Length: 266
Image (cartoon, rainbow, N blue to C red; front, side, top):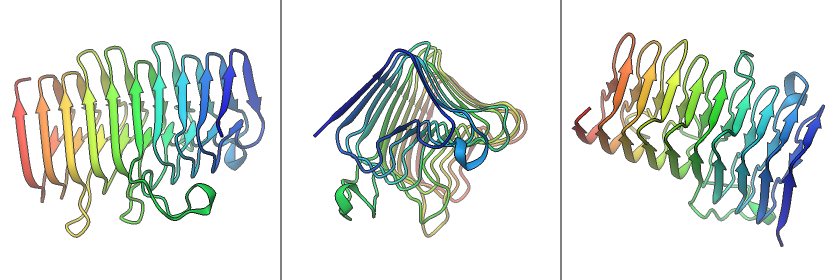
């Protein structure tokens, strides 16, 4: 079965989950208006809840906004496609220090609690196409930060005019990721405004991020250090014809990384 939710107006909810697709298969959400949660704390999370969903599609040209965490919550979700069109905004309140994760969740494409109670993962996680603005205070696009939170088979495309911004730390954070691809096109921006980690793909020596492809023709920047953190990552291809920069230390940080191919013409 499939469910299609089309919003041209406003869906505003004072508790969690303005739109709830948890453990659903084949849900399509098209938003041209506003979907938001409005309260602080745990009651203000998940404008769209896609936890443990399968084949979730979100097309946004309006505003998807969580007052606190998770504009779109994707813990243990599989085969997700999100398109944020030009003029669209997906955010957790970027001025609120408690507001994390505009998009994402742990173990995407790597579920143990899957649709219909299954424990069999597809091994396919998030595909994100961004032409608009994705924003949060920290961890804006998020796929985990512990070796028990590994997300798999992620593809992020940030197109001309697209911005992925973190007010403080980590515009994109997929620590320990498996099979991660990022394409940041000319005219596109990935940035932190106050601190480190434009893109964080670090891991540890025993559980590294693996099979990483970064192709940057736009701008990846950190207001402090570590614009692109690849610490301990393994099997990495970085192609840069744009700008990768940190105000302080390390545009590209690769301590302990293995099998890096770096091609720079920027």
